[in-house]
Length: 319
Ligand SMILES: *[C@@H]1O[C@H](CO)[C@@H](O)[C@H](O)[C@H]1NC(C)=O
Ligand SMILES: *[C@@H]1O[C@H](CO)[C@@H](O)[C@H](O)[C@H]1NC(C)=O
Ligand SMILES: *[C@@H]1O[C@H](CO)[C@@H](O)[C@H](O)[C@H]1NC(C)=O
Image 1 (cartoon, rainbow, N blue to C red):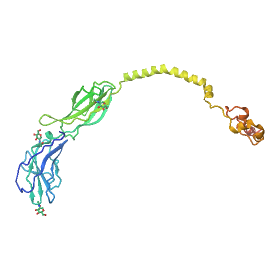
Image 2 (tube, rainbow, N blue to C red; image 1 turned 90 degrees about the vertical axis):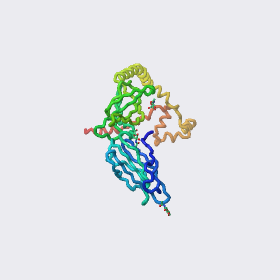
Image 3 (tube, rainbow, N blue to C red; image 1 turned 30 degrees about the vertical axis):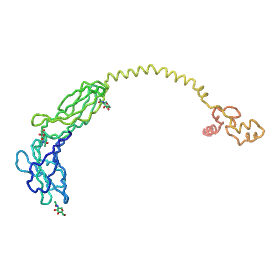
Image 4 (tube, helix red, strand yellow; image 1 turned 90 degrees about the horizontal axis):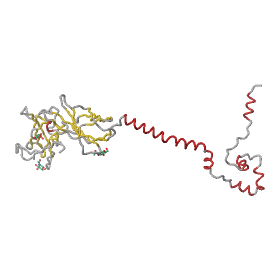
């Protein structure tokens, strides 16, 4: 059972008008000290039913309004003046015009004893090599003087059967003595010390898993291992790269696609008489002509002899 919900039967039958049925399934729903009275709506053929709820504390014999007299809602929140430790009794009835149902009373309710506390909030988890540091806050707003403690269950992720528990009354605390770089799971429950001296226990939080950090010693070992691996593997790789560099010309040569003579030049080579004039005309300065003529396509275009720069230099000198 997740919420405190108890169903009550009408205690005072036929007090006023018997025509209107009393609300049924009257219950107090209380979660993290937020409490409300609620019930099943009363259905009549014509007209909409309204409800009135009252409370009475252990000290006063008079009923007080809860702030929802004549409300159409089948529920009523507790007014803020109702303290957690007070013993209260509530009553509710249905009303339709001049008609009113009998009152339905609840048994005594003490929020501090009867509320359901939810799981605490896990705000942050920071991991070190041998511990997890949890920052936790209660699921409700604490009142001055509240004694709150947390019950932590934790286990190594791989060995789910092993459970250990510890309890501290701080919102920031450590789960210590853990193995480094290991996945641990934990679940937290809040416990509130109540007036009677007992503890009101909350719900368990959903398990969270966190890995502890790697210790500096282990990190150093890892770095040394990496270094040794580097020492073992870097020289051969360097050597291979040097070889590659040394023979890169040959490799480049192998990688080159086979030289293809363009088809129109092949034509020309077969019958040079036809297009010879065209090819060697002064207008033809394409480097391709040179390439075919020399039969080498490997080298890039030779820089054509250019005298302009030389000229510029001589012009630049004043004498
Ligand atoms: C419902 O309506 C009928 C006729 O409209 C009326 O006679 C009857 O008294 C009404 N009942 C209630 C509970 O008001
Ligand atoms: C409150 O808790 C007490 C003890 O568990 C129980 O007897 C009582 O019926 C509860 N009251 C309500 C209103 O649920
Ligand atoms: C182990 O960790 C995984 C991943 O966080 C989680 O899904 C699984 O429930 C954990 N096992 C146990 C036994 O806690």
